[in-house]
Length: 73
Image 1 (tube, rainbow, N blue to C red):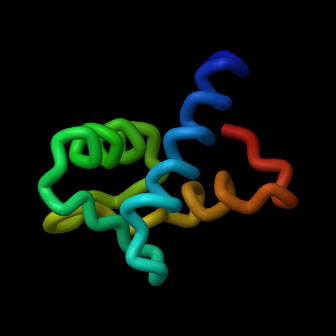
Image 2: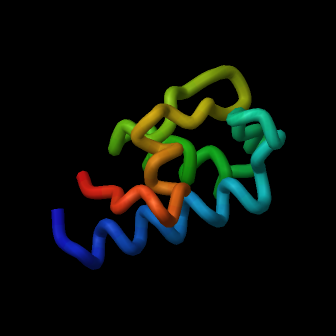
Image 3: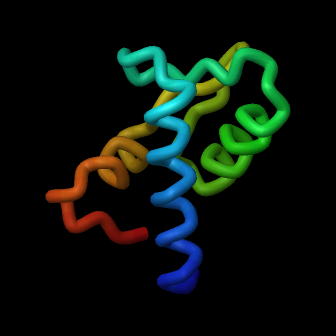
């Protein structure tokens, strides 16, 4: 995975955290197509565990959101 791909995933993850997060680690895409696709992409990289109407951040996803973690794939 390239550095550019990592940066894109981080931006997508933060957009999801800001706009579709329930504040408890659960992402609710509210059946919005863009949110559904975002959760699918994050799940494909192991950052989100799919769940009904969204997903839940995995440990890997939480590390990506933690700026101080020095996250690497």
